[in-house]
Each structure stands twice: as structure tokens, then as C-alpha cells.
Image 1 (cartoon, rainbow, N blue to C red):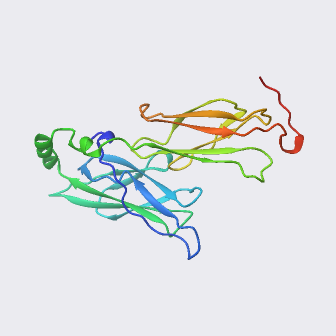
Image 2: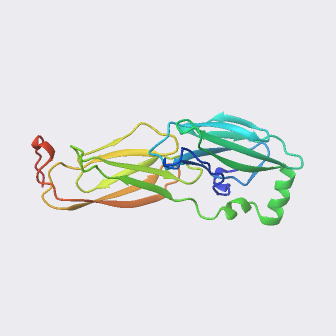
Image 3: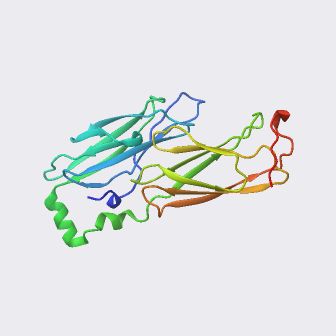
Amino acid sequence: MAMGGVRMGILGLALAGAPGEARVTVEVVPGISFLRQGSTVELKARTTGASGDSGWTWTLVEGGGVLSPGDFGRIRYTADRAEPWARVRIRATSIRHRGAWGEATLEILPAETFRVLEMVLGQNWIKEAAGHPGPIRLSIQEPSWFSFSEVYTLTAEIDGPERDRFTWSFRGPVRDVTRKEPEPGRETVIYRPPPVRNAASLVHIRIQSLDDPKQSLESQILLPRNDRPAGGREHHSFK
């Protein structure tokens, strides 16, 4: 079964932290609903309520099958035989926030059942039920007022079976763009504008999925005027 034919959803949220701490949750995506026996799919997890995560511990908490490591912090699940059907729950527990976990629930169907459903509903019945692919998410962390250099941190991820790897393009004043080391479930780049700007200006950003080029996102950053760089140590002229 093609990965693009997976029904989307988000299943299972869990807590973390003592009272007064920021709530940390884990989501597992895609939250797959149906899978043919013997098929292999990939899952990914992400945390919300935290600046990042060092990874997850994956466990089968219900049902059978095989888990094996995937790329970029994902997990591959291969389904066992299902007679007449079987349910599987797969849990991702945050390594950094041990009390936070999330789950996906899979309904494993035998090949004959899949064949009958395809005859009745058509071969693309799961793909059609999935609707539109999940969009790219982008978060932009602006530099602190107290920092000595302007650094913008941009983090992107996609809610779908595609891997979280993108092409980034910046149009406007750019001094430097660097890609951080791969993170589980997201990709982060660091953008630095020129230290001297005689007027406010816009930087246009375009992100495109490497796995599915149809998935793209455009955004922008408004750079304020900055004719006195921090510390007065760096001076650049540009036209």
C-alpha cells in the first residue's frame, strides 16, 4: 500500500511536568486507521509545549508486528497477519520529557478484506478518505532584545508521510543561512540578516518539501531599520 494512501489523523495526547510547568504533549502522525496485513508504514512523533526534543522511545503497547528504526527519528511498523482483523497501538515516549507520550492506533485487515473493500469502494478508498495532504508548519523565533547579534530561528515540519526535509529560499537582505543538525520530526535553519540596514525591509521565504514538491509554504520577515549594529564591531555596506 502506498504511503500516500494513508488516512490521516492525530491520536493520543499525554501530559508532562508538575503543576506550574509548561504542559508538554506528544503527537504521533499519521494516526493511521487501516493497514493491509504484511504492509510497512512509517510514523513520526513531535512534541508541543517544548522548544525541541532529543527523540522518542517507541513501543508496541497492543497487538503484534515488528518495529524497526527509520530515518530522521521515525519508526517503521510492519503488520502481522490479521484473522479476521487486529488492532495495534504504537506509543512514542519523549526521551527528554519522560512523562509525555502519544499513540497511534492501527486497524490491521487481512488481504481478502482489503480486496473486497477495493471492489466496493475503489482502489483509492483510503487515499480518498484521507482528504488533502497535511500542510507544512513553520514557526519563526525572532531574536531576543538582549542578544548581541540578530538571529532568526525557523523550524518547519509537515503533517504527513513525507519526511521533514525541505528546500529553503530567501529573497531580500540575507547575510547568512545555516541548516542545523537534523532533528527528529522537524528541520531548523538559522537566518542572519545584514548587520546594517538603512531602512525597514522584507525578507520573503519559500519552503518546499523534498518528498512532495507540491507541498510548499511562503512566509516573510519584516526587518526593522538597523543603522547601528550591536557593539559597533561590524560594519557592512551594501546597495
